Amino acid sequence: MKKTIAMATLALAVSFGSIACKKKVSDAELQTQATTVVTSNPNASVEVKDGQAHLSGTFADKASKDAMIASLKAIPGVKDVHDMSTIAEPVVVETTAAVDPANVQKVTDALKDFPSVKAEVINGELTLTGNVSPAQARNIKMSVDALQVGKVNYNYTVK
Image (tube, rainbow, N blue to C red; front, side):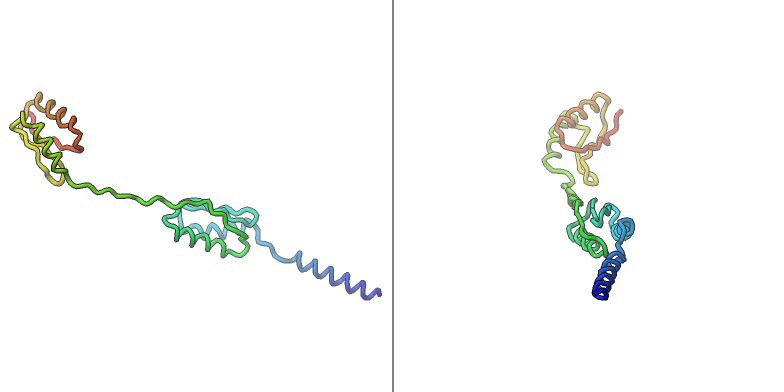
């Protein structure tokens, strides 16, 4: 009976010993590994606490975000990844016609009292050319600005 109790005690001690000797990865080690993974995206960051990785920042698209989450989950010791990141809004590039012909006509109509000045499109911009007096230059500027046709280059000569 003593041998059985001794064997049971020894088996119990070995069991507890093997469980206690199991190496646990520290949060600091996990943080180092996770940070290394996240450095591929400069707009993202990660924080590890209690084996949980908290991902934040901005990603260009869903695919890159999902790939980052999968990479973090693949780190041994990371229990879960909490996604607090966002996907960047796509950049919308507006293209506009060089100059709307209706705007050129509006400006031409506004310049009817100034026959020495003409409105034309030069290098894709509405440009006024000709010779005017200082008083005419003020009146032209006020008239054209009131039309709100956008950018206008005043390349006339003031004499």
